[in-house]
Image: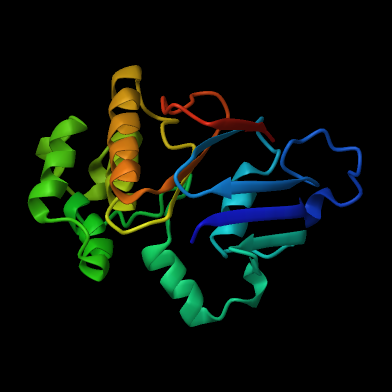
Length: 214
């Protein structure tokens, strides 16, 4: 996948807001593979909705979202499976982890499908993110900040043309923010992937090519 395009897109709940000052909604914009984007927003402006639209979880919008020129509402279930396994790596704001599983088990649920990282590489991420002692801990016993770091590791365990991050550092301090920025940027560079990150305030410290105000 080389580009993700939005054409006059607007969440259904915002219908009638033709005077919207957003740089995303009701605009024609392009996200290109290999480039880094920040979508900064206030709460309630639709950033998580945008991510859900791009990932195919929701379709309650007007206008068009396209992958390489193809309307994503035309994608079949098998095509969506391929997109989610090899084209778009997604970190949802709500993390979607399983509290009854260990941190490593949560990550291996994805990695066993993609075979993208070795166990040594995954353990190294735990070390870099300051949670080496949490590998075999039940996810439900970790703090929200620790859970967010586990979810970030899981996100990187797949091939991707775009890495889609919804408030990836909302529960992290400055030091871990910088570490996340480095490991995400390194992975994107290795794969030639684009990065699309949303933020309400605590921006991931990734150098961006373009910022959009939602």
